[in-house]
Picture 1: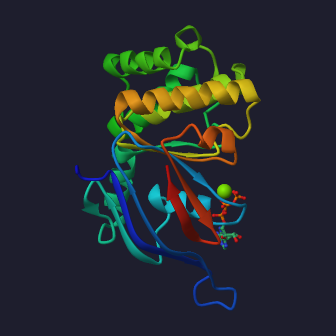
Picture 2: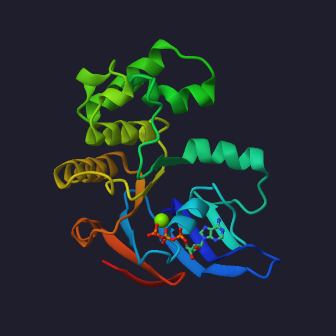
Length: 230
Ligand SMILES: Nc1ncnc2c1ncn2[C@@H]1O[C@H](COP(=O)(O)OP(=O)(O)OP(=O)(O)O)[C@@H](O)[C@H]1O
Ligand SMILES: [Mg+2]
């Protein structure tokens, strides 16, 4: 089998280490994501889903355990290396879109490319417009983000997550703030993009209906994975 995009081995995470409030919230997580995987992460509130997603997204470090991104062990990397790896390997879609509302849709999609390469150029614009076309928003490219509907904003956020062609996209309740119809549209879009681009998607959802349309469901209960069913 090909090198997994992501491999977690025995990931533990504690908060407030060394204080009386110290608590372990992840108790030894093993997980693999392959290219093109479209996986739902479910579990009750407080079970550790966001904590796990932050660790996988290299926004936070595990207390112990190994995390490999495309075969590369991240535990020995310094912060600069981690930041670079995050920029190239991971796209994020959050519950709230986190767009820069004073910028246009196009400018928002260009952001990850700008952060990486410093200066805007015609190729970046063309690429951002391509991505907006893919999410069905080419006509809205020059609209300020705060002039878009919630569903449109979330589609811009998906386009932005794709800008660096990351092998992995993490989404924490990406449709949680949307009405059913927009949620369905954004979900379908992510699934199509996943199967087209070959990026692996891991998305937190509380919706059993959406989860059942994923390739696989992994379930966290009290900081442990209890099932990795199809
Ligand atoms: N920065 C922090 N410091 C201390 N404890 C934290 C911190 N972040 C999260 N926790 C605790 O870790 C546990 C898991 O939280 P987490 O946010 O990962 O849950 P979740 O599964 O994402 O929940 P939800 O479905 O409500 O978003 C909770 O008990 C929470 O109180
Ligand atoms: Mg959460």
